[in-house]
Image (tube, rainbow, N blue to C red; front, side, top):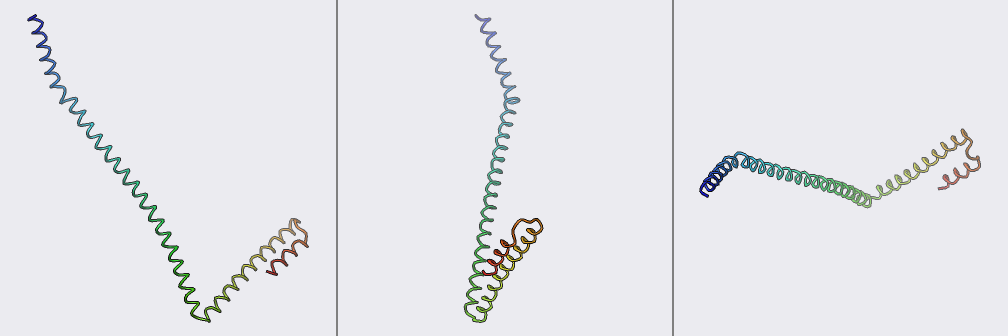
Length: 141
């Protein structure tokens, strides 16, 4: 048994010595490399979170700018109405403008009808009476 114990003791000593030599070299490097990879992964996750938060802030900013623009338009419209209501001459001019706009719309419709009439003559789509009825309808509006 003595020989066996000596061999086992020597084997254990060699094993411990090898383990001591290998651990810092291999496993120490693996451990430090793993720690570096974990740190890199944390940095990447943090950057992704920051990017996502940045996108959310940009979207919210766009929504706020659109809302602000709408409010500005409403304020201008309200102030315009308020100013017009105070002055009778401006009210008269506003009515004239509205009438001119309506007349412009009618003229545009008439132009479109004439254009359609010309195309119909060109290709023979509609009868002349149908076109005249439509023109009368537009003129009466």
